[in-house]
Image (cartoon, rainbow, N blue to C red; front, side, top):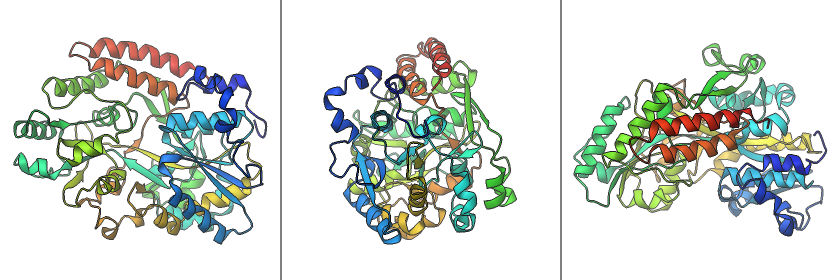
Length: 469
């Protein structure tokens, strides 16, 4: 697969990601549109970068294109914003393009797809990073090692993170005031959280929901699993990576680092997993939260900004989202996820993956470096639509207009909680996510549903993890 196209069989195997094999098999009628072969100048020799459409509007594309041209006038660049519902849908469309022989050179990939792309499609960046170590020292000094480690797979580095979002807790200050509650302390507990929800419910009307969350891999049940001292899959670390840690990070920051995360044996029937689901089921029974909805959480902006929801888990991206929705900087705030057995948080990060099919790998590396530069990210993330991977970008000035007051929480979730880690996303992430979402909804249908649903989840997860991706 160094420079050959994926076969149809391989495409259909990958097709389970998002739309599914059957849906991908029926795309022949709109093949040109799906693969992008009808785009003018498609084969003009440009370095092609594919991004998730909703995350990269025309202004962002213009910022990247014009800035890169100024630095590298000899490299023609084209950025294709692929319209997709979510990361799963986006990855499915990229895989379709690869199978059609119209693969981009670079793909913007979030944690959900890092290992999927790294295992079969990506080019490790180790050689380039070693070669340009002097140039990259400033970058690594500004980026938390946990973000870098999340972009490694089996000892090799596949992406330079440019953004991330950890699942912290957003609180509506109007609702807090209505309940006569103080803003929670950084070390608040799960019991404190439950008591706060009860106070909010008591002081609000029937159309109010104290806690609202979406059923997805990031920000769904996983933060509660982390806080409860467990995970959906057994977690360990691959060996390797010492060359990177020794080259760019001081001893205290490289301690315990490895060559990327491994997620292996499903453990849905673990007592601690069941306990987390039991807790969420109890909140539903008490009317403190609704059963989780699917989707990407965008529907939450309206209900939260109007005071119909009191608390919800979200990352730095919501600061910009709530500001655009009209919320004042002092109308909401953010705090760490509450402590249970641990106060470990989960995050998802993103960066550019270089595909093996690319014939412009050296040029692609130049774009990867450019996209990770501080001045580039300052222009690109000027509306607080995400949390920059670069620590130095999080300043009081950045959040003065949009809020929240405790903006330091976003990066301190990494700095003050060293065990904070990525969402569990093995190469079989599509199947794992599908199983998680299906049985989470089933488990929380009634108080007696948890244990039997988790048993079925375990069986399906075991099958999913046996798949050779």
